[in-house]
Length: 227
Figure 1 (cartoon, rainbow, N blue to C red):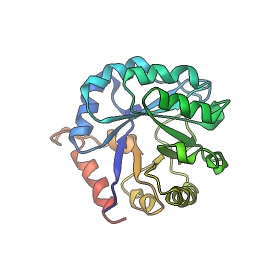
Figure 2: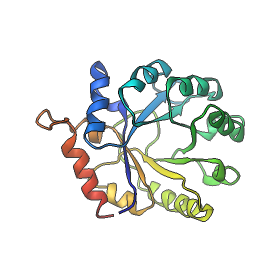
Figure 3: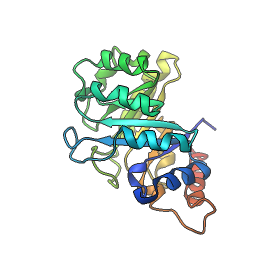
C-alpha cells in the first residue's frame, strides 16, 4: 500500500481542550496536524495564529502542517517557523513573488507548499514545482470547514500527480475539503497521498473509543487500503 498520511484539521477540533484533541488524534493513528490560518482578508474567516502553534508544539512530535490563507503571506512566515511549524503552505494569489516566498519558507528551515483553490490554474507550478515539498489541492473554496467535496478536484489531482511523477522528486500531494470515509479511496486513486479531514474526524469522535478517534481513523485507513 502507498504511504498514505492522514492529517486532521484542528479547525474542527474543540478549542476548549485543543491540547487533548491533538494528542487524541495522533494517538489514534493520524500522522500530521493540519493547522488552518485564516485572516478575514484573503478568506472570509478568522482563525488562529503563531501563538497557538507555539502552544501546541510541545504536545506532539507529529508534523505540524501550516496552511496560510492570509495575504500578504511573507510577513508571517518567520513567525510560524519560530512557533514550530514543519511545513508552511501558501496560495499563489497571496504572494507578489511566489519563488521568493518559497525561498523564504526554506530559509526558515521549513518545507514549502503551494495551495490551489478550485479555480486556481495549475500553471503556477510551471517554474517552481521542483522547489516544492508539497502541493495542496483545495476540494472546497477556502474559508470554512464542513463543506462538500468538489468533484472536479479529482481531475486536478490526476494532473498534478503526473507533474510530480515526471520530476522524480518526493513531493507530497495533499487534498483538503470534504474528505470522508466514503470518498477517500477514490481521492487516493486520483493521486493524493496526504488527506486533510476536519469534521469527518473531529465530528465523529466517541468517548467509547480509547483515544476518541480510533474508529474513524481506522475506517479511513481501511478505505485507503482499497485504493
